[in-house]
Length: 205
Image (cartoon, rainbow, N blue to C red; front, side):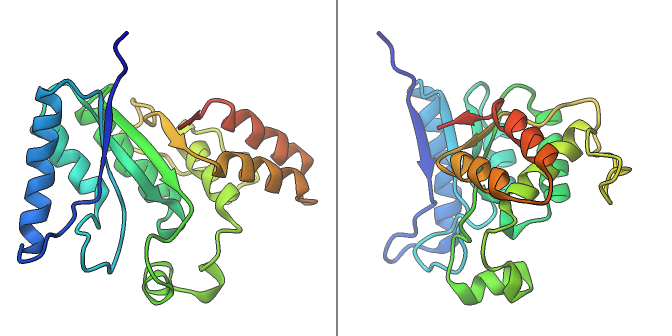
């Protein structure tokens, strides 16, 4: 039985090696992984860690996909609280348009860094936690599909290119946390049910 193999690359910076070399090595390693028959190659998101050069996974995904031919390429993962859901949706719609059927969207909740750097990314102390992660995830999916509730302030926004769908979303234990948080919320039982339906279509790694 053949077991599909996948790789997660943090673009580690070796002692005496330049940061730029670590980034280029990631692209070369992805090419090697494809030649060896790997099924997926994912890149991480970390910030302000001297030994890790993987700070912009969305850029690396495009570069790796452009230099390979069939291996699936994705994020492991995009730390959603660091980004506006609209920006993530647009970025991965573009990647899906350029490399159809080859992109994965792995999503995480952690900042991928220290608290000071997280503050620089998220711009407010109130956003340092991940309490609004379920709402961000729901917004990401709703924007991508064009199915945000009419009452949502961003309901009229269109993600372009609009003739592609968001790549498969991958997560880990946060899916369970989202469901529990959503059901505990007193704001909207309907919103909780909608999020439950959305999460049922997400692949849990």
